[in-house]
Length: 116
Image 1: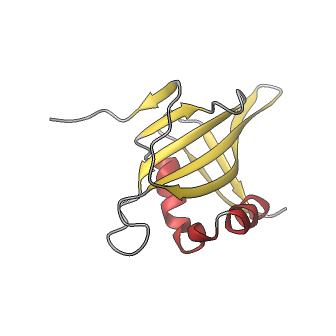
Image 2 (image 1 turned 60 degrees about the horizontal axis):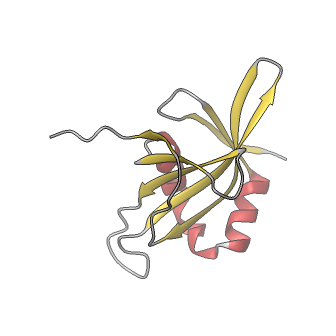
């Protein structure tokens, strides 16, 4: 499956997003279709990275979407990524992405520093 993009999260961990994950995302969560840029922003500059409560091998990138109008105004972008280890290489592979209005609970792996 073709790779859409590859980024580094704020911890320096490589994150890969392919066409299969994108089509899965928009099939299950059609609201995300116009917001692929928000998915990238959530990975590159999340508010928090959480350990998934449903899958100990997955992390959730959470970011306030900053959508200013419409049905998803003030929502969050969530990106679920599975940790992959191949030899000495470790990276995250995105499984799905969606918009929601509720923050997730869970073990925080990383949190953006709040500047005063």
